[in-house]
Image 1 (cartoon, rainbow, N blue to C red):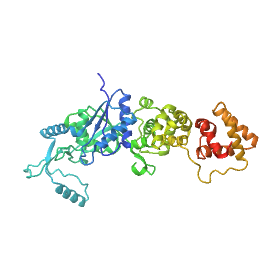
Image 2 (image 1 turned 90 degrees about the vertical axis):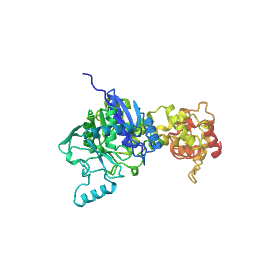
Image 3 (image 1 turned 180 degrees about the horizontal axis):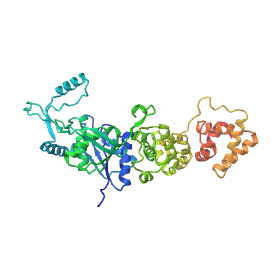
Length: 463
């Protein structure tokens, strides 16, 4: 018997950016499909008419493209499938598995208020479930599902294990609103059936929706997918990750100079593990990924760990690739890379100390914009001034302007004047670059170029 092809999906609502939690769900769904040579479907659940926007759709697509999470089918939009939801609802009506409910908003509010007053859980009381009353004039009905009154729903969650919910805990949920737009629980079931989804991988905030959806799946006569609910992501304070914890938008991380491979690697380790492996490629993640090693407990987002990983990937990037990423950031600061040293050489020099591409671009600015040292920072002593003047003369006579000859000239001056390297290196940095901190002085002066170094020295100490 031929095995069914694995089909997973990512189904965000376009009511904002692609956030970290959504990106991890997309990553797990994508990786599971790729691991099993299946299909990954992208669906946009845009039935929240007040909050869904085209800008949010674009932000989601941009975020997934930046992360390299390519989809095989879609994006499908729920608002373009309204006739299909109406058709499915009509099927349930014909088969006696759904009914029209004419309760007004005011009646529902009164119903819930009375239930709360009695100490009961607010829920729809089923008053139109088997009603023979004539429909009230001028009231547009919703279509409600006839949830089974007895028995229970049991399913095996691929992360959490067996879960059982009594049908008595579930009320008759709305399938179609008055305007024909489906509710979340109905739309998602019809879509998953039509798109032949075999594995639903999503956040564990949806666990309570799953029994309702299973009953609708069965009523529509469709095969059940397997469910896997992954743990939520918490901030350092133990609260659910939100804007107040810092950057949670995928594209905000892109703007701040993070690399997609770093964020993917980090998200992969949020709630999943493969032994003690911390650093691995997207390809290796696909090779390793399974649902058996997804944690049942919440994952904690650690910004410092992400920065550590990003630093690793910045250092791993080729000089040419990193230079290409740095160039627009340098130019956005008003500098022209054509006016300074070769950017690849600068990237090679600064990346060891740069946690982000943004930090690398900031460090590179010392080569593309002349900056005076801070007021009072450069106070040359009587013993250092002649040493710097001699160093300028030694530099001017070098035939090879590279790290080794530069350091040879510096060492000779240090020996002659009985100085230590910091006594020369610190004022050199301030004179040439206007800052006290740079990478090692030899390679930094080599990249800056003979002309700039000599002009700065002569301006300050003569030669």
